[in-house]
Image (cartoon, rainbow, N blue to C red; front, side, top):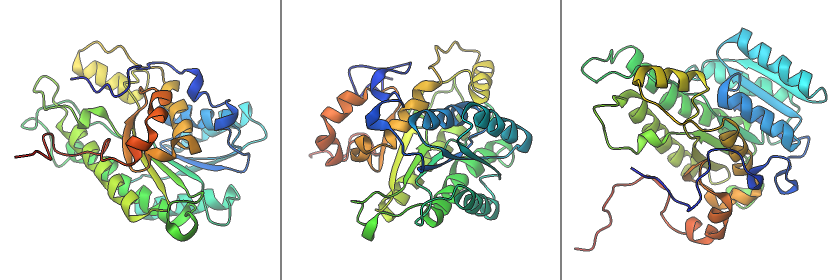
Length: 306
């Protein structure tokens, strides 16, 4: 099934989403918290925001040693940056709230709170049929991270991120970017038994849709990052599926997320988009996209004139 929405599809970074573009520049004081930021796409996204000019980065992840090593590497590459490491499991609301508070405090965030929150945390349960899955164990952990974790992070963002003036969505409010997956939209396929991952990510995107509607002062965008086979999760998927995947460059979603957090992407508020889609084509249709129900999860065939 093709999910082509723009004529041009990208697998690698390209000039229009380069974090070094003046139009995508982040002021040094822009505070960015990246959940799942110690490895993979999250780490690449931290580097992309640093390249865009931000010098206030917080990383939230579960594994303290990996988190500390990544934070140290970012500080070494950008000595003038504040990089805060916050250990927490996204399913633990108390720990996540404390981590957001620490990031807000140590980054010296604006009085209103953090500017950008990227939720790149996710877990893919083993590729097993539902009958073979441990629905109370590994299968359900996908929901703990991908659904409950999404809600926990969103609640923390509502408390610790910058709300737009008057809550009307017209001011410079916070941006919350959630990494979804195209797998949530594929028809079920017995040859690729990913019910735990697909269903939990589908629910996560719907949670984000509700959060965006309930918090008009926050720009919420869900993003399918592509198939990045060099990440831990990507390698696991390739090994378990036994399939060959072409794979996308890890910097494609990282750079796309910097663009999605910019003013250029304001028209994508409360939408679900793919990092592969060409942003120039999207911008050319911004009024149509913003004013239509396109790029929102629904039921194929509806509405239908009968």
